[in-house]
Amino acid sequence: MGAKALIFKIFDGKLDLAIAAAERAAAILRQAIAERGHARIIAATGSSQFEFLEALTARRDIDWPRVEMFHLDEYIGLPADHPASFRRFLRERLIAKTGITQFHLLDVESDPAAVAGQVGAALNSAPIDVAFAGIGENGHLAFNDPPADFETSQPYLIVDLDLACRRQQVGEGWFADISQVPTQAISMSIRQILKASEILVIVPDARKAPAVKACLEGEITPLAPASILRRHPNAIVYLDRDSAALLST
Image (cartoon, rainbow, N blue to C red; front, side):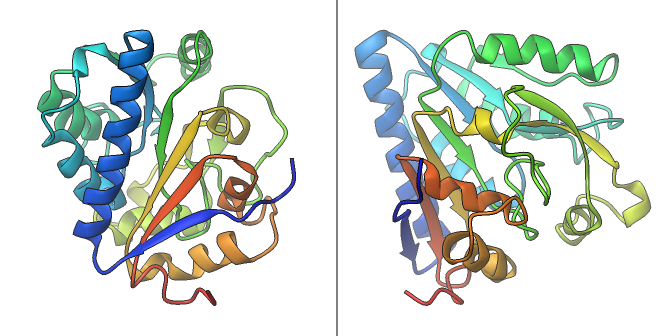
């Protein structure tokens, strides 16, 4: 599949961005539930998703018991109750607020490879209606740091986290210093993410502007992992003025 003109929408601020993305997400979920009786989603985590998830969970037009959720990635070696745990993030910011009952969390304490296989099999048992994602400061998509593997068909991978990725986690306040950031994670693979029928990419803040420019206007390359989104037929990138500041269009 060749590159396409990726749809991106620019908003004055992150709140406007979040409300618009939540509106689109809700429409996708309502349509899937109306057509098939259920919807399946992939949920992202991290500070870029705060306002979006607040806007989405505040809505009252989604039948959450009919929604099945998977998530993108999780640190290896981090307990589920750690403030930076993505399982904790999703429990507090999505599951508890919606009452969603069908969810698959990456419980990595025991056997990460086995968990990757089990959750991956469940993930591939039916199509995914929408994936929520972000773009990292190093251009990563999920925890697929550069150079990302564009070819593997495995649904989840055990990956090494690069220094830029780990520094971002410190900069966002999840960890006090780099020594506390895990060096490995389970991440949904690039090809698996691209299987979603639609992808909503939530990318606010000025610190993301260089990665946004590289991924939206540069070469499609494993060195800018999120650039692969330009090969998806239904991906929309939601930007604010700060994250879009370096774009030429």
